[in-house]
Image 1 (tube, one colour):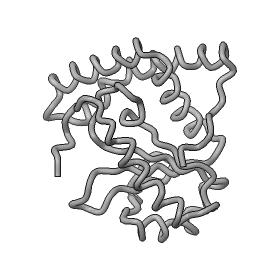
Image 2 (tube, rainbow, N blue to C red):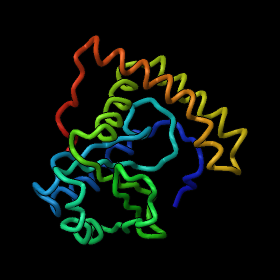
Image 3 (tube, rainbow, N blue to C red):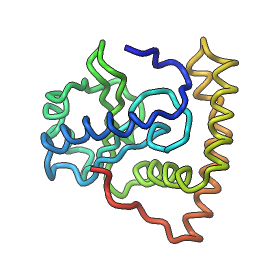
Image 4 (cartoon, rainbow, N blue to C red):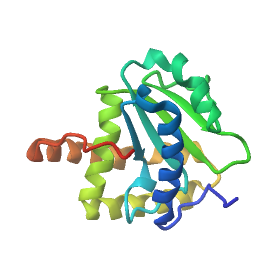
Length: 181
């Protein structure tokens, strides 16, 4: 398995990997999830990223996780109870498999919408996409042995992009596009 603690050039295969996993999730979960979206840096064509596929599942009520947990696990993921982010439920790949993060969020929630807006803004703004990639490379060189500091270091540019995305969303009347799966 490839080293996933790197910043890699965008790989068109990431979309295929998302589609393969998302199709299994859709087949298993059916209409128990409203949306299945490819999110995170691997979902933005041209954006260098850690080669980790992030998938967002949108559900009507986050508390219904009990109804879908075993189904997500049957597709090859492990529920991470220690997740401290109360806006989502979180699953990871079974150890030894390709790194994949499953984020289950409530449809229409701030965290679900913000994730989609951030992705869509970067898809529509190549200059900010490039600026973000350059900052990720810079931070990786400084903090390649300290992942938490790398993540923390991205904060200022992420919030700058979110602020721009907010303005852009009002200018264009942004709303989430059709679900990826």
